[in-house]
Image (cartoon, rainbow over all chains, first blue to last red; front, side, top):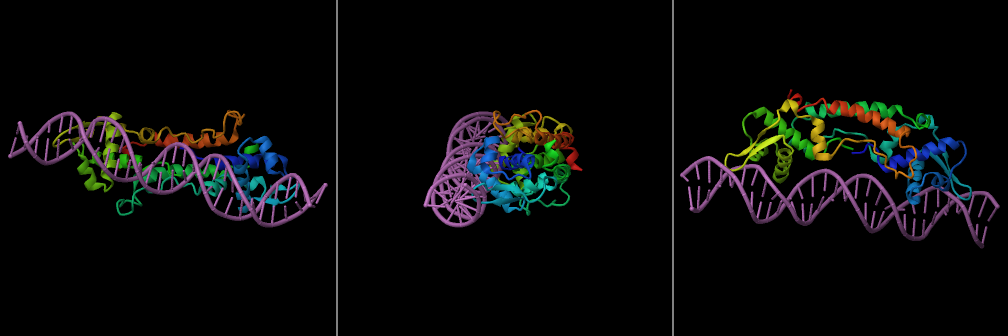
Amino acid sequence: MNLLTRNTDYAVRALIYMAGKAPERVSTADLLRDLRLPRPFMRKTLQTLQKAGYLDSVKGKNGGFSFLISPEKIVLNDLIVLFQGPVSMGDCLFRKKVCSCMRTCPLRKEIKTIESLALGHLRSVTVASLMR
Amino acid sequence: MNLLTRNTDYAVRALIYMAGKAPERVSTADLLRDLRLPRPFMRKTLQTLQKAGYLDSVKGKNGGFSFLISPEKIVLNDLIVLFQGPVSMGDCLFRKKVCSCMRTCPLRKEIKTIESLALGHLRSVTVASLMR
DNA sequence: TTTAATGATACCACCGTAGTATCATTTGTC
DNA sequence: GACAAATGATACTACGGTGGTATCATTAAA
């Protein structure tokens, strides 16, 4: 059970690297030199970040990516949501007809508590805070 | 991202039901009457609990399952481990050669913090505590 | 015009979860 | 002893999400 998928992990590391170079523009090739991981995957990840509005992109020679949102404002939880969907640890796995205790389910309650704790943390971590 | 799989969820609910009837012996058929879920799946789940030493089983007519370990001592975290493996949210997803920061990785550190919080909770919840 | 970069998109492989099927074994009851 | 009701053991299938690949189009600098 991993909290992050590789995709999210890649994204975070790429952003940290980029933040170290900012405001310089960084290309996929630059990133690959530092983070040795599958090239097409890295590209896809960066494209996702661009589409989501975190990064600006410039095509063509000497192109690459730069921040549209500053690293201080890029929150880990949002990246997780982007790549994995919302952190929701306690969705009832039973069909509604079966589980009559949707609101009072004690198990669900415990999980939700844990989820809240996790979310509290994940929302406080930013790309910038991870650089130290 | 779910903290529990269905399997674990089934197990917990079955155990709660059984704890309500204890020390009476309960058969798969009894459980299915209450928790309407796939029969073969329920059976497999109970067998796993029996093999793990939580339940005693009696074959043959009027057979069924009963507790070997009391519900007060059956811990949610252990059930998760049994059905899903250890809760380890922060395994480094990178190949070791790539990730040079195994011990100092700031991302890992954050995740491990969350993991500890979750584990603290999961280890404090028992089948008995879920009955209230 | 060439080349280096991203944009977009479709595709494949693997693995874990969920669920099914089947036969063997035990034991109470008639 | 035969039958029925229960578990023991095990092998199999289906599906979806994650991880990863491939390809072609587009842009812009040299």
